Amino acid sequence: MNEFTPSAKLIKPPNKIKQKLSSAVNVRDLLNPETVNKAQKAIDERKDSFLIWADEDIEALTEHLSALKKDTITKELLEKIVKCGEHLRDRGGTFGYELISLIAKSLVNYCLTIHQPDPKHTVVIEKHIDGLKTILHERIEGNGGVMGTELIKGLQQLTAKYSQ
Amino acid sequence: MINLTAYLKRINVLIADPDDKIRLLVKDVLLQAGFTNVTLANCGEVALEHIRTTDTDLLITDWRMSPVNGIQLIDYLRKDSSSPNPYIPIIMLTGKAELKDVAHARDSGVTEFLVKPFTAKALYERLVMVIENPRSFIISTDYKGPNRRRRTDIPPNGEDRRINPPLNDES
Figure (cartoon, one colour):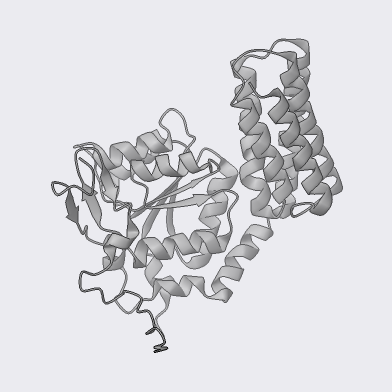
């Protein structure tokens, strides 16, 4: 049985939020350019903070990479790398650094495919971290234009080659 | 003119996200709109306890949380007989953006899905959808949640149907 079989029930739950608001309130006013711009400004004002957070995450990634080079890949170490990668992926584009998000997404996705220790993984992870360092150092905002496209393409080729 | 800000203060919002920076950022975006009752939770367990003990109107949750992740939280809220609020509107805000992830979240019963990185506008658009266009609920043996086929919410009399202009009669 699924929702499209006759035995499925279709109900209209009470709209609690709407009930709490006056019927004269138009929530679509949230989308007024002035309101949206004010909220987006609140995000943009934290851009400098993002750069500090990103620097911390990339520093942590560099330490994890050093550990990877000394020892074998462990689940715990991979989880730490994924966590830093997720921070960069989720935050980067929010603050205008889309290329950071794209590279971090590629790093996270690659790490999630690793099930067996293999030195080749260290190479792929290192290339991603190098890319992230460059973007942060050069303060490359947006998608990085042609350079960004080439960088992503190179990482895609590398991950495709080494993915298990 | 009605002051939306004055009314949004009545709405209780819960943000569940393991990333403290994102949690605060989302809260800030909501505050800018006029929401004032915004609570933060760093995992699904804390979020669930909050929903159990307070009148929460809206949940914005990430997927990847531990020990209770976003999907487990939604599963419990939608399907468990002891759920404190099975119909609560849920916006999933997550970096897990593959098609299979979206389908998984949808099948768990999320109301709206928003991918990180995000913009203020995208978050407000989801809020408007949740409040102004609430979807009917399906209750079946294998699914409980918002109707996954939005188009079936079209009024039965078809008044919202798009009317095609008449074809030119070339005869």
